[in-house]
Image 1 (tube, rainbow, N blue to C red):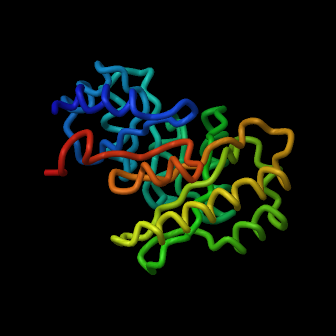
Image 2: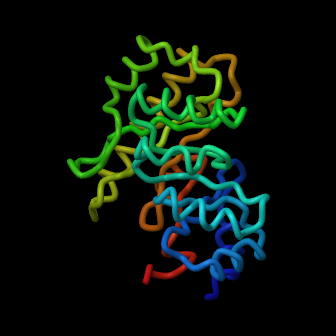
Image 3: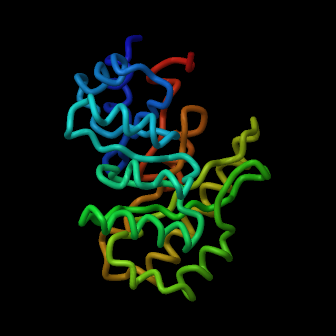
Length: 221
């Protein structure tokens, strides 16, 4: 299927309340434009300067999500336009994003990345570190960021029951934090998990935002 056909098929498949983030890293402008023309508006990138270059030439109503590991010295390149930063794993990083957002008089939405996978190669806060950050760090004093949910990656494994267990644990944490720290903030509503190989399970376990790349664009060149 073409990019446009894949976008249309996926959007019909996803249940109400679940959004599609098209992971467009390393993809050419033409492929992203085709997805845009098919109605897709949210795109995810892993490299800040690549994302900034694409944002400069593609339609201005695109919502750009940064899904990669954030290098603090490059936040300045995305601060003017990024819609959501998925992979925040420290208070220090929240503070840096806040600093750069303030320069543009913006409030940037952020997700706390949780390390649930059984792999050392993944980034993210442990569940206890996440609880400690929200309980002990002065994040509410940051006026130019907003924590809107959590993000996680399941283990890279063929054992889908393990992945399901990880996603279920994430939903339990999300519900706990929502009740404890965000009871009157409807903006805390995003649970970003699920990729091409495991997104149906993620949706069943409560994901509100699935990150799909190769299914839409094909394998990266």
